[in-house]
Length: 233
Image (cartoon, rainbow, N blue to C red; front, side, top):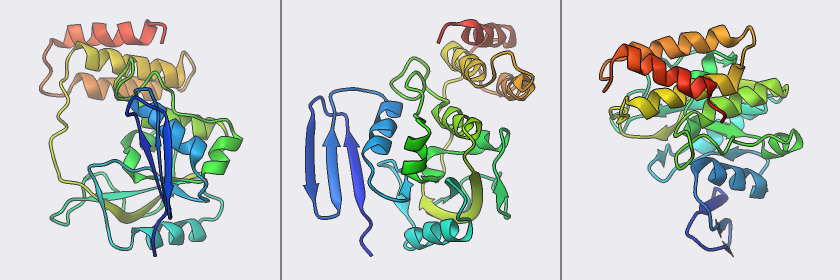
């Protein structure tokens, strides 16, 4: 079965081309979260899968996704698994059981694992926060913020232990510098502010602060995190 494809390009011009089941839309703008939002705005599918240009899909990925939404008809968003070309799980944190996502589990989700019901997202007025993600002020955090906003809006988020995407296993490639920790502080502030749920964010920050490979001292990393937390995003 041919899977309908919507390609969002940030090529520096506004254009739209449609051919068969595929549509190409380009915009004069930059930013990963902006691209995600354009896809949600323009998707006509009942179920849509977020994709990147550096992944492959398993041969029956569409059947797995449809089966999952059939099994869990009340789910608005379902997250899945990524495997490597060698056939091993991309993350060692994957559960072998399905579960309802909560505020802690969404921290482990990558964008290419996410399938959504676009109309449900649009009906709630939900969008990726364009201040976060590659090409934005803060270069990460767009997935967890989006999923947290979906939980706040009352949507149902579920995890299903099925592999749908193939991606080579690689190191994170992240430079644990001042900008990295400032971004993490901003993510926690955006998610929780000063609410009681902030304890979740503090735990997340502590995990970042004890990571190896930092290019600055623990004190400097902590200071950068506080700068991000108290900055006006």
